[in-house]
Length: 74
Image (cartoon, rainbow, N blue to C red; front, side, top):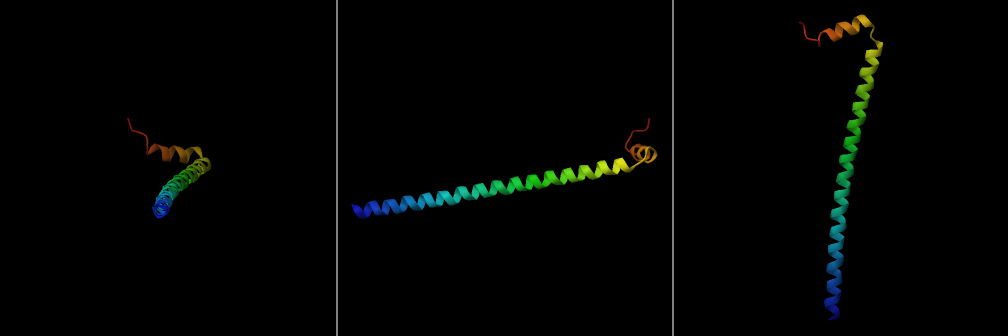
């Protein structure tokens, strides 16, 4: 009977070990996805800043000329 209990404890330990590895992998995958989302968000902020800076450097005439290509002609 003692041997059966020992084997049972080993099996339970093995199952808990596998579950720990599994959930650690899920957590690592979620962290990786969050990092990619943060990198994309930072890239979008950089692009927005570049566009804002470019618009700020344009004078009214060049800004109107560039905007004219996007406006419908009536």
